[in-house]
Length: 203
Image (tube, rainbow, N blue to C red):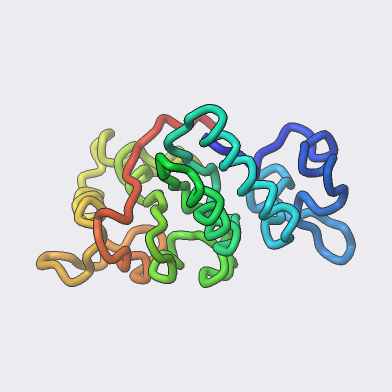
């Protein structure tokens, strides 16, 4: 489980040590955004950070035989950085799998970042369908949104839609199958591109 967007201390983070001022995003007033919740959104748009993430994954795959990586808040990471991961892993014989959580900023550029709304722009990259988690076990951010397991049967259409790879052309789909990302999120292109998982999330 690779976590770059939630770090205990930004200054002490190894990327900050290697490239001070470049590891996390900030505006012209040096104010850090908090799309990840704790003001440590990884600045993957910088080449030094992108190369660091790619090198870390390659090292884990080669030195420790890690055969799969799940990125936390992958939706905040630039697609170019994810593409660099695949370049780095191309030298590894075992071809480790890479997937991630597609949550991101509400105003994110979906063509540039690895979020669920931009999944149709990705080639061969697997992202988690966060709507499935919410539909089954309820939202991690709302006490009222309790999910299908607690009796909200209206979520079953969304669950089936996700399990079929969000094929928006299949018979029986309607607006209840779109999920919290809207109709654009029904364009995964196939179930093989969806990382489907449900975890217990305690905020």
